[in-house]
Amino acid sequence: MAQIRIENVRKDFGAFTAVQSSSFTIEDGEFFMLLGPSGCGKTTTLRMMAGLELPTRGEIYIDGEEVGQKPASQRDIAFVFQMFALYPHMNVRGNISYPLKSQGMKSADIKNKVGEVAEILGITNILDRPVGGLSGGDRQRVALGRAIVRDPKAFFMDEPLGALDAEFREHMAEELRALHDRMGATTVYVTHDQLEAMQMGDKIVVMNHGVVEQFGVPQDIYDWPATRFVAEFIGSPPMNFLEFEGMIGTGGTEVRLNDVPMEVPQSREGANGKLTFGVRPEHVGFDDDAPYRGRVTATEYLGTTQIVTFDTPNGLLKARVPSHEVVTNGQLIGLRFDPRTITLFDKQHGKALRSQGNEGVLGHG
Ligand code: ATP
Image 1 (tube, rainbow, N blue to C red):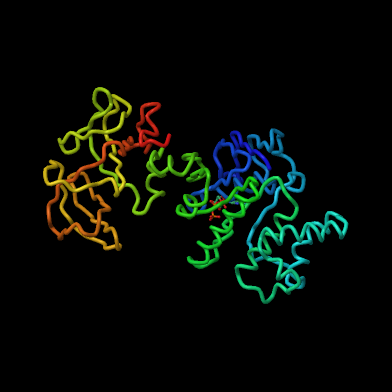
Image 2 (image 1 turned 45 degrees about the vertical axis):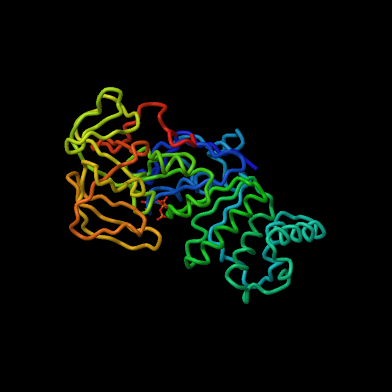
């Protein structure tokens, strides 16, 4: 078990900077997600924590000890690359016991330890089977067994479920999370899938172009995105962005969209110029009396809800509303936004214009 802290870590490959100065802390026992689009630097960050890549600058601490220049073999972590990578000529027991044999552990101790791990993973009944004929799920469990048998300080996983079809992926994600909850070992998990990150993670770091955009618990990242990139990357459909030019007025609690006053959470008072009004589709409601209106351009039926697309004076907007709301293309509808859930961004830098301390007004801090 371990706390992992990275401080101002940067990685250059020649003239190219893959990871810009990054800092965050992974607490002991956390299931921690490194999330971002392809090429954003998440694998490089993980490899630096694991000791497979040396940082160009900055420090990496495991349980308070600076390990930035130490090789992987001295960091006591287990790296789960691709769960299907097993030794084909060995049976299940051989695969799981291999790391212990390499450490020179006595065979009686190995037998006990492998038995314990097989019990945790529910694979005691297949210990003497060859790995060749195993189902995909059992192969994943054996590969996991090989990683956990050493009792490492932390587990590092790089898109471990990437190659699986959607249904099986969801099942294995649940199993991995349950295994983590039983063992309580610090786990760092790389994914580009925002849903996977939200479902599995205690905390998430969102990266883009080598930069840490935000770091926090899933709900805060969803409700209080620090940047427009995060607001767009997380959520499906993503947050709506209505562009306007104006000023955040006295008290920072009102803006005017197409001359209609809109209540907003306390934002940085006095910010002016080109601004963006961010609202999630599920926080848009219909109201015949609302002065702000949009014209319906499309509807998408999703069962209990539907996504309705509007043309508004400030750009396109999607609303997620119950399916029983009857809407027709071309209809003009009054729109209301839940004022507690709005995020304003400055258009140029895409940063949220929050006044300090107003995060968490939705009630979960
Ligand atoms: P993916 O999900 O596609 O693997 P990622 O977010 O994990 O993406 P990284 O693999 O960390 O991204 O790569 C970040 C950037 O660094 C990419 O542009 C990649 O091409 C570059 N990069 C990674 N390793 C090297 C290397 N050894 N030499 C040069 N460039 C590299």
